[in-house]
Structures are given as structure tokens and as C-alpha cells.
View (cartoon, rainbow, N blue to C red):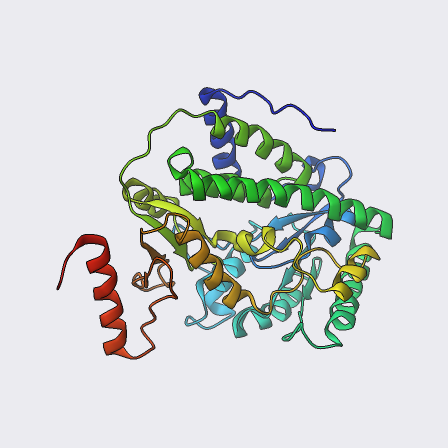
Length: 379
């Protein structure tokens, strides 16, 4: 049965956003401060992680996002090379300085060579915490992919059950899947507002709402989103003449909030890959029949197939930038750790991305054609 949307004033929405900003800077919750039903916390990087498994085992999933731009590295360089990516070094630093002492465990992913070996470093330095590496299939289209990923999830499930001291039965796993699917539907709604009415919701505000789930339970985050979306839709703001952009490259180490605010001052950010949430809440309905059957058996959380994420991301960016026919958008790429910002690619209204790795002369002709179509400039 449909429920009436809560009425939230602008002041109430400001309170929600301030609460989310407080959560952004909050430490890992201690065991005695956890929501009812949870016995510990499990950390993971902001890429795909089956939070439903941890949730069903009574472990609160907590996003580990590195130390940002204000953390001084004093201990990590003694354990890994200074050339290692910043999220691995700063996460290790936070572990060594006690900032992550409340974690019950940490699951890393082979997203790069450094992250692949971080599980071993973690197990050696923090033996009291569960340290695991989650391996996903490189090609999810092969016949054995579902069996492999189901076995990998079952292995991870058993480790979490052992750590939590309770059983995550199939029914509790299905309940967790339903809870997260409901949350993802609200995330899709939030991003639909960004796409269709970006003057009502800035990238910074959306990011704060998104990031809140790295510190609170899925159920609390769902309630927060319901109230926030009602307040956002009720906003009476006028559209401004700003370029529409897609922000990419912020899925791992998170950009400073000041950087997002600076972009918001000059652009409408209609989509992004911050926290890799776009891939997660677009995953509904994209599974093969075998994967769906495995999920229905309580073995596979929704959205496990991340193999073709790069191609899907590019296709989705084009779709978003086509939502206003005749207007081109620009991809804004986040700075590389320790480096400068990477220029974005110009996007044509109805065609593919103009890529710098193609024929240079042809790309220049494409950019010139876009410029002429939009402004009449014949340079």
C-alpha cells in the first residue's frame, strides 16, 4: 500500500544535510553504539561489496574512504612503498593510528595491485579483525561465473557468520536484499532529480546524502532519503543558465567537499560515479536468469555483475547528457591522487564520446562540429 510522502520544509532539509555532513566526519561506531540487531562493523572500499551479506549476519557495513586531504601519513610508509595509491596508504595509516580500531573486520577487493595485497597487510597488523579479499569473476558471461561468485559469497558469508557469532540464514539474507533494493530505488529517484531538475539538488548535497550510508544502517538511510527527497521536490528554485556536466573518477579516493562545491558554483552536475553508487542502484533488473535464480535462492545479492561496468558507465553518461536534446555536456574527471585534474572529453548531443585516443584530426573535426552546432563558432 502506498504511503504518503512526509512533508519536509527547507529548514528540515537543511537539518538532514547537516546531519549527513556530521556523519561524513564521524568515526567508526563502537559496538555499544550500533543500531539494534548489529553486533559489529565490517569495513570495505567504495566499490562493489555485497553489503546484504554483512547486513544479514548482523555486521554493519561501513565504507572505508581513505583519509582525504587532511591526513598526515606518519606510519603507513613503513609498511608499503610511497608510490602506492593514496586510499591504500591512508587507510593503512588510519588503521595504525587507531582510527579504525572499532572495525570487526575489513574486506578489500583486487581493484588494483595495492588493494589486492592490502588484505595480507591488514591480517598481519590487525590480527583481532577479520581480513578478507573478495574476488569477483573477470567474465560474468561464462557458464561457470554464477557458480563461482555464489561460492565466493558463501565463503565470505561463512567468515562473517563466524566473526558475528550468529547465522545468516537464507530468510534473513532475502530480507536484507529487499531492504537494500528499496534503498536503491530511492537512490535512483535521487539521481533522477539530479538529471531532470539539477537546480533543486546540487552534487554536494547529493553526495552528502549518498555518503551517509557509509556510517548508518540501510534502514535508517532509507528513512533519511524518503524525508530528504520529499523536501527536495518541494524546493522552489529557479533554473540558471549553467552547463551540465558529468563528474567521473571519484569512485575510490573521494574528492574534497570543497572541490564539489566549487564545481556546483559553476555547473549543474547531472550525474557522477562518486562512491560507485551509480553502478549499484542501476543494477536492478540487469541480471541473467541464472543469476536471478541464484539470488532468489538467497545466495547472490542484487547487482553482483560488475564486469562490463566501464562500457555501461560510458553508455549511461551518453544517456544522461542526451536528456536535453541539442545541448552538449562535458565530462569532468576527478584529479588523480597526487596529480592535477584530467581534462574531460567533449560529448556530442547524439553520438559517442570524443576520445583522445582515437584519430586526432577526426576528433578535432568532431569538436569543431559540436562547437559550430551549439554556438555558430567556425574556429
